[in-house]
Image (cartoon, rainbow, N blue to C red; front, side, top):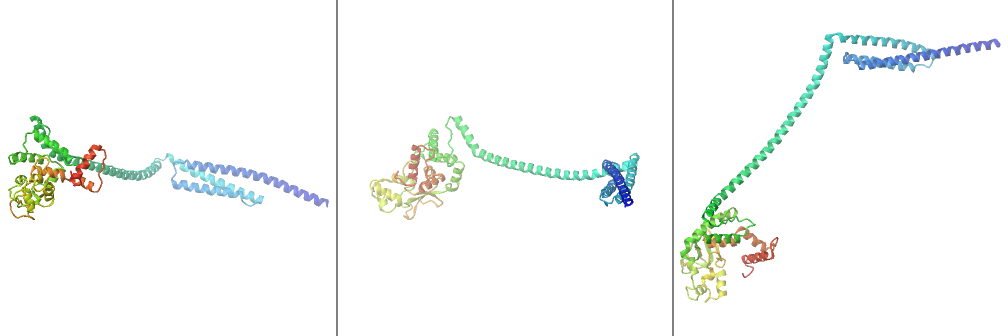
Length: 420
C-alpha cells in the first residue's frame, strides 16, 4: 500500500515536472512565435517601401506573407494537447523560419537589381509609360474641356457682338430717319434766324401735343412773315402760301395722317345742295339774308339746305341768317360742321350745277381753313379725346382746375355735347 502511494506520488511529481517543463517550452515557443510574427511584419513593411520590384512580385510576396501570418495564427489555435501543441508549434515555427529565410532571399535578390542599369531603365520606362498613359488621358480630357470652354466663350462673345451690332444698326437707322426728318427744318431755322424771323413751328401730332398750341405758334409765324391770309378772293395767293407752309410743318404721325387721309382729296359739304346759284364756296359765304330765291331763307325754304345747316338757319331766323352763319368767315376759326364739310375722293361738284338734293356741293382740293379745321376736330389724338369723353374716361391728371375745365369745354364742343 505504501509503495503504491509512493509510486503514485512519484508519477504525479514526474507529470508535474513534465508539465512545468512543457509550460516553459510553450512560453519559449510563444515568444519565438511573437518574434517570428514581428519579423513577418517588418518584412511586410519593407515590401511596402520597396521600389525595385514589379507589381506582380510585390503581390506574390504579400500573398506569401499573408499565408505565413495565417499559419502563425493557426498555430495558436491548434490542439490544446500540450505535446501536440508543442510539436505543432515547433514544426510550424521551423516552417515559418524557412519561409522567412526564403522571403529574405527573394528580397535580397530583388534588392540587387538596383545595380542593373537595364532593369532600372525598364522599371523607369514602365513608370514613365504608366504616367504617360495617365497623363495622356488627363491631357485629352483637359483638351476637350478647354475646347468646350473655348466654344462657349466664342459663342457668348459672338452673341454679345451680334446683339451690339444689331443695336448699333437700329440706332443708326433711327438717327438717319431723325436726320432726314429734321434736316430741312434745321435749314429753315437757320434761314429764319438769318432773316430775323421767329422759329418755325413743327407739329408731330404726338399724344402729348395739343393742336391748339401749334395753331397759335403757326398763326404768329404767318403774321410775322407778313403773309396775308384774310378772307376774300384777293388774298387767295397768301392763303395758298400759308397752306404750303402748314403742310411742310407737319412731321411724324401728323405728316402720315395728312398723306393718307387729306392729301389729294376734295371738300364735300353734305348739307349744301349743288343748286345754290353761285360758282364756289367763297360766293356761298356771300349769300345774304332774306327769303328771296337767291337768299339764305329762300334757299332753305326751297330745300337746298339740309341737316345742321337748315337747323341753324331756322334757329337764327330765315330772314336774318346769312350764309356767313353757315360757313363762318375766317381763316383761323372756320367751323365747317354746320355745312357738313369732310374730305372725299369724289370729283368736284360746283354749287351752281343745278341738280338739287341729294346732290351736294363738292369743292376742289382742301384749303387752309379746311385743313386747320380738320386738325382741330378730326386729327387722331383729337378723335381719341372725343372717344374718352363719350365713354367718361377724361381725367384731370396733373392739369390745374382751369386747364381741366378748358379741356372739358373743348371736348364738349368737339363732341357737340355743349352749345359752345
